[in-house]
Length: 329
Image (cartoon, rainbow, N blue to C red; front, side, top):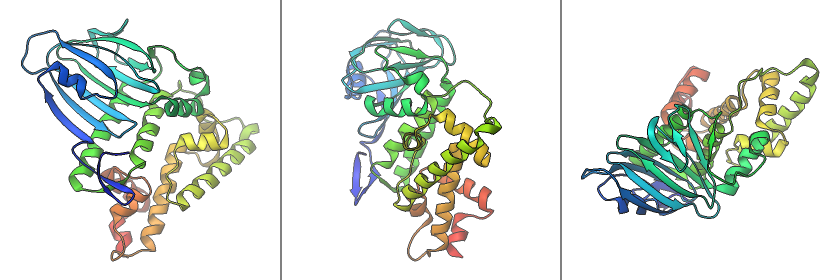
């Protein structure tokens, strides 16, 4: 659940959900991350310790820290909480026994993990914390080969690009800030679901492969995609935004199989196809409504478009007009 002012089934983001704070005491750096038992110790000189940005969505949190003075963090993750994190490349950084000298280093830390982290001055770190059961269920649905066994200790992810996680975190902070500034109410379950989906796409990425299935598999590909399309239509008809995890779980295939199938079906990725389905639903709703009864923002939010600037660009590129023009016509 989002923290903020509730409006029906929606919430307007408020200061408790999105915070940006200058840290001048190590104990404050620990206490602001109350979902993890942690102690912090300042290890180098400086009145200012860090700049911390937090997006708290209840079961999921997004945290960015720009360290001004060196710090050590000691603690243990609680039951059913896991994190996906990175540090900008720095040979001095240490995450327990692991380092971060490579540009594409990501760390996955499961529940009940004791950690000892050294973050040098000047380093930038970020992480996303999740309900572990929810995260692993989604990861197994998308990539069972990689996530079939539950990780029991801290590990580095070799295939997931750090730039993708950095980009995702940056996008979510910008989106939350824009929604908060505009006082736009958001469905209380939508942002956590979309955040999880976004990060799962980073954590479960597979090495590049030929995306086109052999001809003999085309009939199965069409069957898979028709099942997926029916499920998507059912969800959108009741204002539920399905995710790729939802589709894989319902159809019973991995994300790679879904990728193969959709390339044969409409020559698009599942993510692109799902986004176009949602855009078409927005257009239909705008064309059958009027500016007296709804707004473009309300309809965009209804179908899961939180980044309104990107939504407007995509809408214009596909339909060759702005959503406001569609609503007014």
